[in-house]
Structures are given as structure tokens and as C-alpha cells.
Amino acid sequence: MTYELRPGQRLGSILRASAGNMVECFDWFSYAAFALYFAKVFFPAGDQTAQLLSSAAVYAVGFFFRPLGAWLMGLYGDRVGRRGTLIASVWLMCIGSMAIAVCPGYATIGIAAPIVLVLARILQGISMGGEYGTSATYMSEMAGRRDRGFWSGVFYATLMSGQLLSLALFLVLGHVLSPETMQAWGWRIPFFIGGALALIVFWLRQDMKETPSFMARSKVRVTTWDLVRTHPRQSLMVMGLTAGGTLGYYTFGTYIQKFLANTSGFSKDQASLITAGAMLIFMLAQPLVGGLSDRIGRRPLLITFGIVGAAMTWPVLAALSHTKDVATALILVTFALLVVSLYSAVNAIVKAELFPTEVRALGVSLPYSLANAIFGGTAEFVALAFKQAGHETWFFTYVTVVILGSLLVYLGLPETQKDSRIVED
Image (cartoon, rainbow, N blue to C red):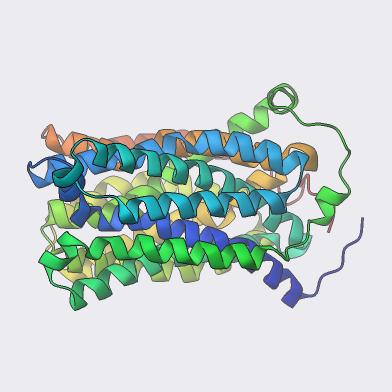
């Protein structure tokens, strides 16, 4: 089926789909960024590491419900359509964010406070599980064959913009409000903003069109067993190629903010500024790296990430743990994230290119979410647990080993740029 789109139309379609991902990432990462303040609100008194460990555990809970969202919304996306799935996911994120925004603290309602926090993160986890896979599928089916890597990079850059907005808001509020005010109620602001933005995205997505691939699909009713039975190798590949990349990203893109404050000794503002600066460069690199994959293929980039990522993780984290210089820390974190970009810029399109239309949303969503929950969602918890046990460097080794495991998958991965299952252009 031929479906001609001008570059501007392709960009508009992809950005409309990605707008929700940007908002959902803003809400999702606001939890990670502002946990430095609200950990004391939702959990009993204790040292900073213990409180952060508790908030990280709740963060991980949200990740473990992402596979449920990926399963439910992936099936819905393959049976009914990508558009309806993307609208539903935004509503769930809105509800979860507003629940966190208005929930009283532990001092007011006791154990009910962390329970509400967990329930809100469960809703956000289900939302994120369905959002990523379906929007990645939508993007891959809307993009043209020759430039899918580039559009994959643009897609991922819009995701990163949500995290950057969260960090920017963190820095602005940190300067406008006193630490006492931030501790008291300032941390609630991003969750109110996130809920309002979700309503805007809901309005934007009302006019979204279905992709030509979905409209031309066979009318077979997809089941989870269809994915397991007909595409077991591809599903396992998605899990394997995701493990090292997602752990690398959540180490250097999310946990690193707490690492810089809790281990290196930087102030909260300095840690956030370093993270934001590195993430800005990381975001701008995504379309460039994605475009490179259209010229040389996806597989060489993934293999390079596996080799360099495994080699640099230990020395970079070790150096960061001892440096007190902001510029040095910024260079090290930026370098690490640029290495991770060799995975992040192409990961969405590689997964989509492995599956046919009939199971694509489920195939992209479910295996990815499982690996993301196991390795990405637990990154902070594992790191803080090792630190509390007095063996922080064990986390460095753990990240290295997982990236090496993904490297083995990359070596056996077909070149999806040439053998894509996305047949429509």
C-alpha cells in the first residue's frame, strides 16, 4: 500500500504521537527528580540513603506494572488501533500524576500516604507500558523507509525533552522557592503541571489518523500466544537488546542525579545542572545518530554501544565518585550518554522492524517492558542497595556485565534496516 507523506507531514504525525510520550516522560521523571524532596514526606524519618531507597523501591514498582500496560495496550493497539491506545495511556498518566500532587504526607495520613503513592505509580506504570510501544509503532509506520532511523532519533529526542523539562522545572523551582518551601509543597507543582499537560495532549490526539500499515493489516484477532508461538526469537531479542541499553540509560540519565548528590558530594542544584546539561546534548544527538543508522545500518551502532559501553562504565562511574569539579562531571556524564545514544536513537525502530503489522504493537511493547522493568526500573534500587551495604562499586560491575550480555544479542541481530518487516513506505 502506497502512502505518500511530505517531510512536514511525517514530522507532524510523529510529533503528535510523541507529544504524549513527552508529557508522560515529564511525569515519570519528575518522580525521580523530585524524590530528593518528597522522600521525607512519604516515608518515616531516617537517613537520606534509606529514604531514597524507599522512594526508589516505589519507582521500581511502577516499572514492574509497565509490562501489564504493554500487554493490555499492545493487544488493544493491534486489534483496535494505535490511536485509541495512545489516548487511553494519556488519561491513565493524568490520573496518576494528579493523585501524587494532592496526596497528603505520612505525617498526616500515616501508612496511607505511601500506599497512595504506590497506587499512583502503578497507574503511571501501566500508562508508560502502553504508551512507549504504541507510539514507537505509530512512529515506525508513519516514517518513510529511507529515513526511519532519523525519525526514530527525533522520536527519542521528544521523549528526552520531557525529562529535560522536568529537570529544568526542578532547577527553576530550586532557585525561586526556598528548600523549606520545596520540602513542604513545592515538589507537588510538577505533578499538577503534568496532569494539565496530559489534558492538552488528549485534545491533540483527537485528530490523529491511523497508520497505513494498520489499515492494510489482515483482520486476524491477535492473541498473546500468537506472539509467543510465531515470534519467540524476535521477542527474546527485544528483551536482550533492551537490557544493557535501558540499564545504561537509567544509570547515566536518571540515577546519576542522585549519585552525584549522594556519592560525589555535589549539591542538589549542581547535580541537577550537570544532569540537565548532559541530557540536552544527549537529546540533540538522537536524530544525528538515528540518521547515521540509515546510512550504515542499526547493527553497527548497537555493537559499538555494547563494546564501548561495557568498557567505559566502571572507569566513568569510579571517576565521577571522586570528582568535585562540575565541568569534569559534566564531561564524563555527557560522554557516557553519547555512548548510550548509539542504542537509544535506534532501539524503537529496530524493535518495530522485527515484527509484522499484526503483532507489532504487542511485540514492541511487551518484551521491551519486561526487560525495562527488570533492568531499568531496578537500577536506582540496586545501586542504592549496594551503597547502603558498603559495596557501591559492585553496581559498576553489574552494569558492565549486563551491557556485555546485550552485546552478545547485538552480534546475533539481523540488520533490520535491510530486512525490515515494515513493508509499507
